[in-house]
Image (tube, rainbow, N blue to C red):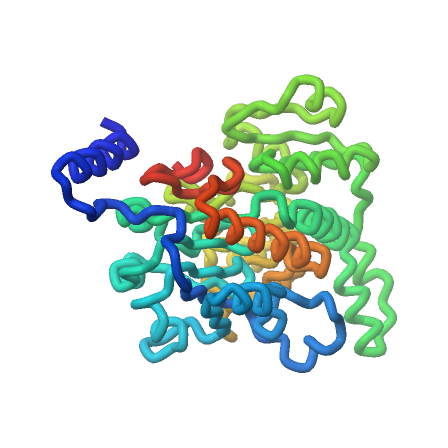
Length: 382
């Protein structure tokens, strides 16, 4: 029997016995004040530089006045790690936890067990792998995100990273800063994007948008996904579907990772798989750092098998100062920024408000926003 059916049967059994308790936590808010905790990064002096900077602690997604006017308690912090962190002080009695992929609050099975009142885990953005989804499903929690909120932001960033790697841009920029002028030191590994084979692993919202933006560059476009895209769209973009990932990868001059982190994808780019890639391959990964074997990537960059690696996702986040990706050659890494442009922030802040309004009213969320619902994981996380 499916988990959903088991949960429903259990609730019915309790109801028939005359008990008023339920065996799973309900999505919809019960009457009264709710304790909502948001975990975001601190902006410090940068908060005052842009009135639309809402995705930080100080901006609080622009929700404070609205929530507090309705009698809810809204606590915002960046302190999320360690035994005495601010987040853990509120875990026992919070009802809703809002976090982002850019400064993730890792919601472990231990934290879920302590959170007796918790009903809803909201990701302000896309990607909920900072939550132990299995534990959340077993506890009857709802996990949801703002699907589509930063698709444009991430796809544009990926295109930028491809061009930065292909044109060997960063060494030239560093020459300007250090006062050097050595054209040969840049040009020996700078290429045109036109004519190169670009493959995306994952062709969901971000992957499709990236392929559409790559079309004018006259690349050979490949994609691998669990679902084949609509034939008309595939023809319009000019992308070819590759059913077998390991058949596609050696064909690629450039590989872009656009899939979620799951137990199946964790560490999938290990030493063995990387060794089968084309020598001199370029890799862009704005998906999740843990999809890569950290040391295997660093070693392949050092040997030149990977000619360039760029992305904004690390494992863990924030990345420690001794993380090997900080020091490997030919990298164009940044902190996790691709999905938190000001435009993206405004979209995911509006999405969080919409979701909270639905939660308070007892309404369903848009189906595409659910990651865990009634004990079942969304297909991309199974």
